[in-house]
Length: 344
Image 1 (cartoon, helix red, strand yellow):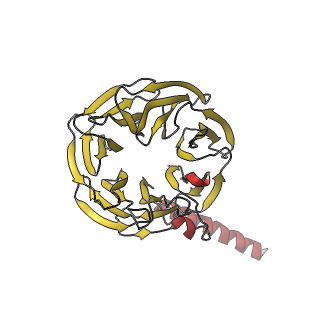
Image 2 (tube, helix red, strand yellow; image 1 turned 90 degrees about the horizontal axis):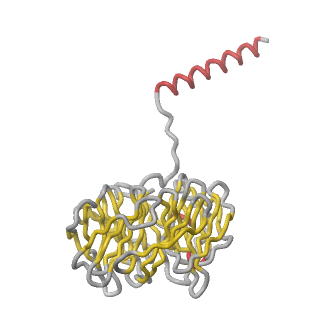
Image 3 (tube, rainbow, N blue to C red; image 1 turned 45 degrees about the horizontal axis):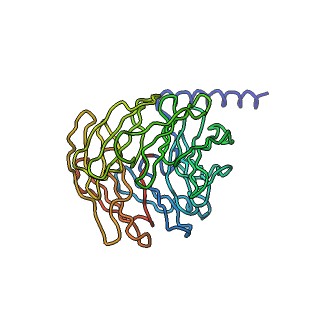
């Protein structure tokens, strides 16, 4: 009886101690080594199984290479990492030539599952409240959006697209699929998230679409006709163009990103900024060039502009980080074919 009384007293005291600790300070949960910072997609050379992911800390002081293999028993990620998308605590790695999407914990980079059912040359991925949308575009083959449940990654349906199925954005109650790739095409297909059915297709008035992104619940596409370029806005859930900004005299603009209501884009290796309520772009800087290449990966994250030069896809890529006004901050050696940067 005395032992039971003593144990009961100790248990009550421990509860009191834990309650006091909870009241005195916030309990901090360490999500993993890669919380915050920037994920870097390493495309790799074609048919070489060189796809990988790197990590750069927010202050640029720490760089970790090959974090997929490092955290998954040296497993090879695959062939051609097309893009990375994050949702909740997950990162989705779209491995194009391996016909799969690897899902990992975005903070620890431990593998969670592989999506490969009804995947054929996957390109990009987007998310609604309940679903995952993955564009697939096989050369001389099917073009479609594969839909999966976000809850358990189970396959739902395939939505055929008559044209190219490239970048994909969810805005409002619609899925917007860019029907353009490699600088050719001027259409966007629209799918309803309510029943995952195709609704309609719209065309941009001028130029071919270079890139389509989502920002502030709206959809933005940057296009070019070879002489001038344009930025188009489609309001969330809409099926028509809401606004056009003409970038007069700037040819072949691409790499559109938007941060804090300012658009950033490139033309060749020149980088520009443009507030969304303005019409005159400001030249910021020229990205590094080599005999084999120039600007390839591009993003604006937490007040910094990240760029990559993939060179010849045999040598390590050169990553250069600039301030938001175009001053060079740091150069970093990257993997083979660095093609993108993603806030983590």
